[in-house]
Length: 389
Figure (spheres, rainbow, N blue to C red):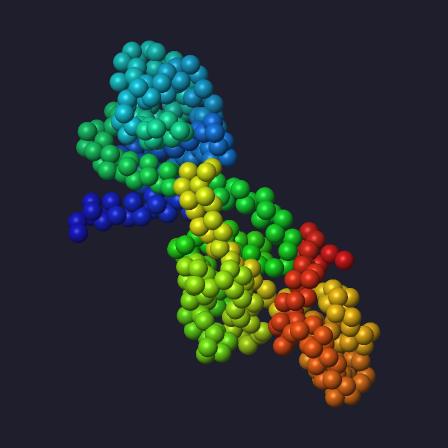
């Protein structure tokens, strides 16, 4: 594989990475600028139907704070003429400023050219990516004032990337809209002490609330990989007969296991296992333009004692005052010995009370008890991350 082929593959990999991570666009545009021999590159997406999907991104060598200045200059009548010219030619057709404005005096009088000159730039080219007109996405390249515009060789190299950029823009729409749609919900979920993850079919993490990010940062069996996917352990689940997380995901996604499947993920640090509920939801594509299937993971960390309240258990299952006190201490992670010492009673008394609690609440162990407590009284957190009273 020669250098040009290797560079092309690296560039296309970077382009498609923007589908799930828009923060990668400046790097991609910098790569595009190098490919086209340009000083910088800008991507503009305007969308009358879905304004949330509009973006303006500049390559890394052009300061981000200057983007809006440049965009405002594009609203002049002369710049709109360029937009109209791009609409008159097939998509992926590159037009240069010299083609649109053969009269240099007209071009030189444009506000955007003043902005270019402040960066010692002058010539530029632009291309419309999409062909159907459902939205307008434009790539513009700018060149230093001490050279001419895009050469034929540079144009051919840019042409090799344009179909991939156009495809990436098209693919990102359903994912970006899905993320936008759930962003408001996610802000509410951030108040929950329950971790919420939304995964795409290839295990890319589409959304994660604050508690999920905390668990991923700890990296105890679950982590965010460098490629943005969920790092899923292959071994060590509770009991040999229990399915692995990967196996459970596959079964729920294929319909072989019921939605709402729960498993317990053993942790390497010896703490109580994570409790993970798995469900699948579907977006029919009416608004997104393409069907999307995503997997919802709701995870409980039983060690997050500060968000657990057992008051709901006490009321619903009719625990006696003594059982309620023991249940609260169990929720705090206290051992039977510690509970006996705190309450000043015999260990056998505490063991009998915990058995009564399990029997009344229909739980087999402390992990199930915590899970049931959180399902009855979900932990709402305040702005400091503490459970609201």
